[in-house]
Length: 210
Ligand code: ADP
Ligand code: TYD
Image (cartoon, rainbow, N blue to C red; front, side, top):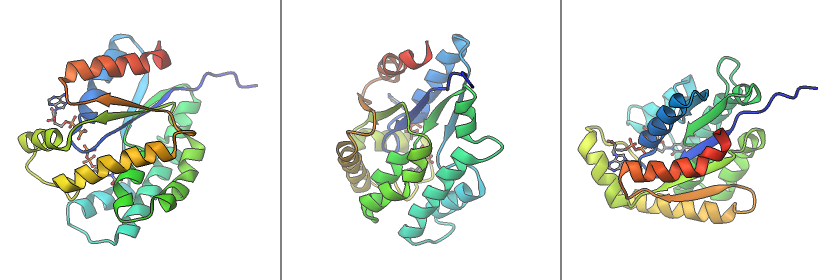
């Protein structure tokens, strides 16, 4: 019998500019210092499907919202199942995985145009294969998030309008409520300094790593 311990699976969620990449970087440094092996990765991925999504988001390609929703589903399945660096394989081999966005991003963002129940159904294949031990929602105020983005980026992507971010934040909470019996979610106030947020992130995840 294979007694190998599975890796932990932590997903970071939040509106654009909430500080996900910053927190993942800080957590990665901490884990490296402690000598803990892990794999940090993000969605959309840089696979062929992920590249199509990036092209659509930057306006270089057109697609209906239902097509975009389906592409995110396909990108996610490939992220899990890909034979080269698939996350499922890594977790089964004891590597912990930290993911920048997972299923809740689909529920929150795509539900503006596509019914949430369809999205939950369509993503059931993924969440059936791998469900995060913990979803960390970095809760940033849309104004704060937009200020951060404006300071640091030139290119404005499709998803970064304020009214959009307000809606997306609302949809996140709707999805958390809908799935409260089957998903483990923790909400962290992300309107504070990166260091303060990182302390709370560490408190939430340390039990999975040490
Ligand atoms: P996301 O990955 O969620 O889009 P980022 O981590 O890229 O967010 O953060 C967006 C911008 O805001 C970055 O330039 C980052 O340096 C800055 N930033 C991140 N967290 C904080 C924070 N707690 N306070 C101030 N600025 C932050
Ligand atoms: P990205 O450039 O990674 O932005 P961020 O640093 O804010 O995460 O682009 C990700 C965008 O894709 C972001 O606006 C959210 C969106 N997205 C969805 O709409 N649905 C999804 O399922 C995922 C994973 C991302």
